[in-house]
Length: 412
Image 1 (cartoon, helix red, strand yellow):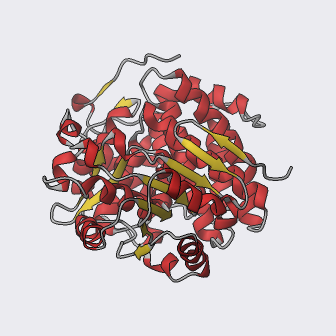
Image 2: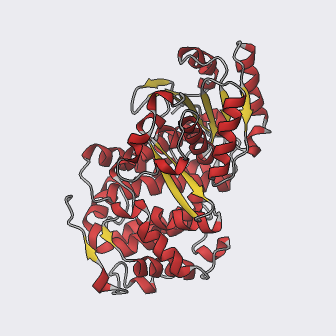
């Protein structure tokens, strides 16, 4: 099947298909951008693809400039520098080009260019979002070059608070980009390792959204179809990075995953956020490694749901164990390490990882309410590369039973 062109209006205006990047100048005019700031990462800024985008816009009379002072896990200082570049350059909008780091940073910069309060005042807690002067949030056109985070359809950014060594979710509905371009041609040069890690990140979004405790059937439906796309196309795109259709399907699945996790996330992301802040590790890779350990630890609460998913995915073995085996086989096929030590993470901050994970906002959506000590146990199991500390295929051992209770499950 050839990659198709389409225009969608869910959850925002999306232009989908090969070559749709050529619609960017028109979108700039449509949104009133005459001098936008293109925000990307340092590596991407040097590539011919980015230079072509800049030249295309400038030849159309758009005064585009580039800002790329962004870390792989963007921090508050990156946002401050981006806001300064936006204001000093007299810009009137933001174009976000890149993976999740660039997109998250761009959305946070677009939020902050019109605010008088510190970035951290808009952390996704309670009604903090009401503090935003929303009429001063800059428009964003988002163009992902990886298929993983789905940040292009999100209303939040994950930014590292360096002093506190934690990742903070910044949220406001106006952070949702006004337009998105999903052009698979922009992802063709992505290395196999990043294609795999970002693809597994998309799977983690879908899987945790599907297992989350909240009632949201629409998000659940989006999640399971996105997982079907990932099952079919992630191995293809990792084996043949030039397959344009597979690249497009993964971009779509990535956006679907981020749309679905309005339903909630869970333990994978709670631990991954903690490790990303402490070790500056790649978020997608962290989720990929953590995935089976969190699944096993959640088994008692999600087994019925997972067997239903396995039937939809048409696995040979539609039991929980069969689904777990599929995840492990997929990871091995994609050369994802089995344990966290393989990517340079140690146990020196094990207690802190448990505490940070338990306090992370993503933990609220997990099917089981774990204590800090239980999160520590799951982290240590993923370090060791063994399910032993989690019990026999999901019967979570009582690491701190007196401090843990299951939430009521509103879903069958």
